[in-house]
Length: 108
Image (spheres, one colour):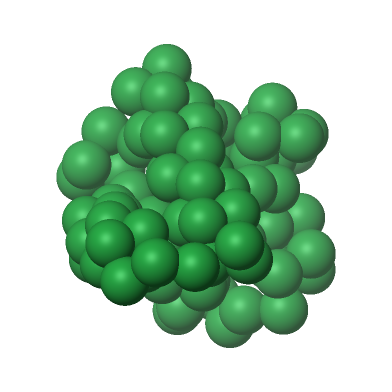
């Protein structure tokens, strides 16, 4: 593998979306990509994150427009539903493509 290929791959790696690259947020986005829509309790059970962690990460993802959060009530209990937005879907796809290309380049 040439130094140029490694340099280019590392340059791509440095340019990945850091908001998505964080493991907890990547887990949330990957899960939402598969299930389309999930409630807060389901996200917590599937990711193993605490309620506070999920809330914080969802706030960051929603702030970037990557997820849509809908708060409501079900049987007089608060319910938070989350889904991957169109912007989030594109950003996640771009992230996965970039990471795939980097891994392929580094694999030789």
